[in-house]
Image 1 (tube, rainbow, N blue to C red):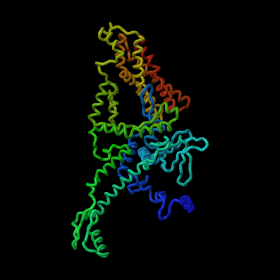
Image 2 (cartoon, one colour):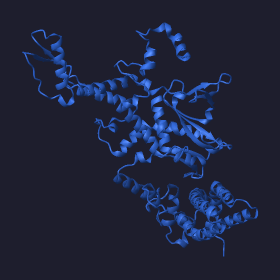
Image 3 (cartoon, rainbow, N blue to C red):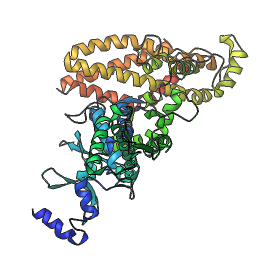
Image 4 (spheres, helix red, strand yellow):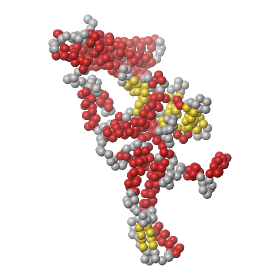
Length: 562
């Protein structure tokens, strides 16, 4: 009572019970009255099917894309960081009660209606995120601390108490706003547009439910009297009103006449007005009208072109806003140099099977995708022998053109070809060899980590050692296949004598011995073998390709004598 009493004292001078003020109408009536005569609030706005369809499309698209945590590779490339604690939080389960789809869908819907989405992060004693919980936007109030003026979030709990949350624990993705911190309330901004949409829906419903229409006037040359009018109204309402009776023949007595007034919906351009309103609602949420079933007036486009349009002009800014907030608040400064999260947008851009296969053909023949990378794009398992990229035999790098002219053409006999200077060979081939070794290291580290994670945790040290014996027994052949193109070209440029088999054997032998030594050291020190192995693999990942490339190039050019 005291609460409502206080409101009455505060607003007493602004209205009466007979003519209440607008704020009181809004308070009890459910939102401000629009010019169309309808009320629109965040609670009922999505009852308008066009608004619901737009918000649902945006939110479910973000939810279905999948947010992936990646690890940057050196010198270039990336891998999915399955071992990072954020991977499952963003890709599978942000909290024990919600899937990632539900989480991103809910928060995106908050942003597209209230203008802001909030996710409260729980952290453990080490500062690692353990869960992310959505918070209803009407309960969160960004503000400045009185003393420090630092940003903080005041969260009103269900019991009415306020709790202050620092910004580093609140995922906040605002929409368009006046200060860059808080987004405008989207429903408030579109209130008149949505009100018109509600009015059109109500008009349509009443047009069909009251089938006799107010557009008919019945006249009589005499006074019917009160009883006669009531009888006529009752007869019309009983026998002719409603959708099922709208086409019955109207029977009149005693020289009554019927006159038609007003205009049918077609003549008043009702259909055009309704379509225009729907297109305006689509425009407000930047949704292409054809995605809501409206006839597309633009020239026909392919599925891939439509997907690209939707990604660039509708989803692009929204996804970037999510990614920047996640990468800034869910990773430490040190982690940001190595890890980042990104939405997987390939499903939006997925073209027809004919367009995809034509693109794969170009990539395969051009040499910048191998067969298993293509199979992975099509969700197929890899096959042996498809890891090696192809290259056109009638094309070479421009930097090697002189080499080719001096050797392959001028002296086809391998034993008599002239070799280029060692410095020239080193400058031309060292970057190529380092890039190829980087690919080998990434593959080797990923394979060994995967086996170590499974075997050292479940099967034990001996099983992992046996796996290492088998893996490094076959590894020289993999290395030879990866280095074959470089070795052949280098053999031509150097005048012959390149021995890639010896280099592959040496690489595999050193890797094998190093990992076995790490296992022995962990056993003697009673340390965690998985931690010891992964530490060594991380060192390889960071520097092995760059440090090993000069020595391998030297061995390729100057193989040791037996």
